[in-house]
Amino acid sequence: MVKRIAQGMANYYSRKNVITDDDVDVYSYGFELVISSVLNLVFVFAAAIALGITLQASAFVLSFALIRAFGGGYHAKTHRGCILAFLVVFLAFAYALRYLPESAATVYMLSATGVSSLIICAVAPVEAKNKPLSEAKRNRLKTICIIISFAYVSVVVYRYFAHRLDGKLLVYAISGKLAASASMALAFITRRISSAAHDN
Image (cartoon, rainbow, N blue to C red):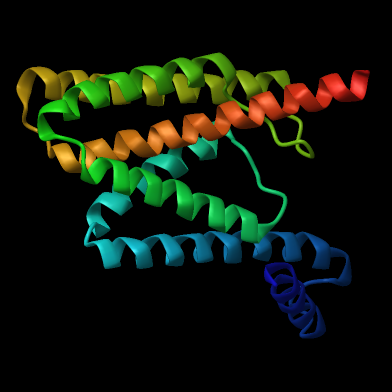
């Protein structure tokens, strides 16, 4: 459905001479990404509103998007699969964090940001199958990911010693980072398995 809508939009702009016929495929792909992202946000925030955790969802989504923007991650084969997967991941974290004792929040954040930082440092960036990265760009993205991870670790350590930050928002932000790093690890493993199968 997303692909059909995007193709229809691109064809419409082509008929109106806003874009050329040669650009239809490029714009169609761009529209697909935009529509899929919007639907992702609509479903996640609809769930967040129902659960009364809109601010926490914002922290989760922004954190997830920040890591994914520079580090890449797993892509489902269909837009429906992508939207469903992200919604399920968000709901799983929301459910688990709802029952996380406040006394365990700091330990969770230290553990989660530590594990996610190790994953990011080890595998980032994970390039898309159809978008290989040059060595220079790969190094630049890896550096950015490491800097972002260090910033997260610094904030959590600061909270550990100062206890001056909003714990609930930070827990969700760290969870978004953990989810993004897990997506990155899954993409990395999938690529390795695919490459090994192809070589054999």
